[in-house]
Image (tube, rainbow, N blue to C red; front, side, top):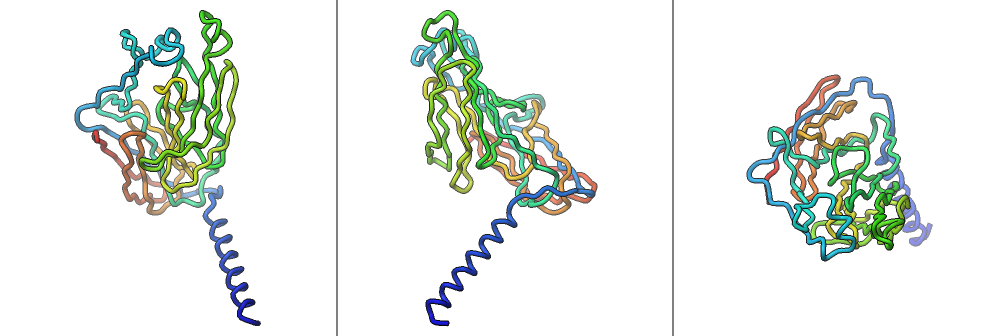
Length: 272
């Protein structure tokens, strides 16, 4: 074999190994007879940051939109840090990485609805945070119409603008109009950068924002109203567990899950 042949063979071999490694990294469902549970609570320390306010008059459809989350003085109030009972922090996604095989993962996409000029995440307790799976579908349905306005009687125009957010960098994924009530926008979630998250913002009403943490397996939870969470059916082992909030960032702890037992992981956030 000449030099070119040897080089070609090495390249083919590297590609084959990379393909095998990628295949192994994909999550697979399998019975978990001795699975354990992870439970805990996410809390907030210190003074809660003041909400952001937006002047309805600077955006379209002020008369319709000010019926929701208004301070009664012409402003939309957006509370990004919400604290519940016993300082429980809301809108946090807790997830475990490094699990390649475990309980079935049936993720049918992410659903969002517009309601009163808000983005509402469906199927969970949070209106500000959710989860997505790369290449899976995100669906945004327009539920807003204003019968008192001839221009918005069949639908309040929203313009969902999706971003990949990696640190201070925002890259557009899609940017499309959603003018009619009942209309549904369907797009795949395309995220290319490591450690990035998915953000959805309305270009017509910039105070409409919601964030999504990408997950790769079913071992995640969105915390409840009191900041508590529980994840079951976890294969025994030691893992990195993350707690992510859209504006407060991410924390991680190393946790060992015992066979048929329970482990605990608590997180405490503070204002930046």
